[in-house]
Image (tube, rainbow, N blue to C red; front, side, top):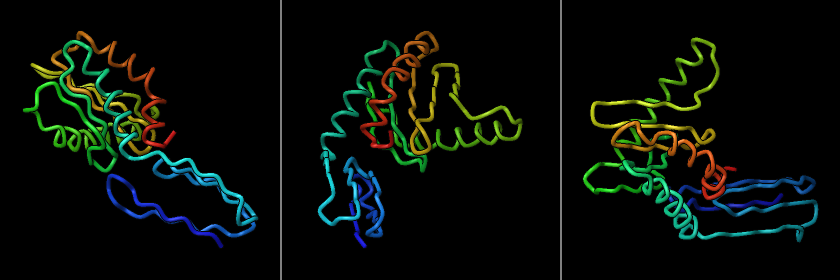
Length: 174
């Protein structure tokens, strides 16, 4: 039996995997991929530091802020904890916005199940002086953007579509 333990760079939680000797398992966690086989020396590892991953995410999120009118770009875990976020003006509380949006997407998903119309693709909430867009990124994360108005929502959605794989790779959930 082989065992792999890895500490998550954000939460600090330890993830472990026990693998029988006669199995082949590709296990990915925190961008360290280890393949185990029937022979003890048969493995490969490609570690990427947490700092490099966060730099990649910050660069990706900064592209959202380059769109006129976008005030915040926040990557949030489905548990409501902020993974990474950037804001144009530091007065808005990104963590609170992200945490509340996980509840909003949960409500939208419940509605989708109730009316049997499929999964949530996007949630857009328009307010008097702002527009909030929430897009699920798989089962583990959400992309939240806060804009001044709806004038550039197409650019935000296009950028998310084109950078989706890049974000998922940085989160190592692709």
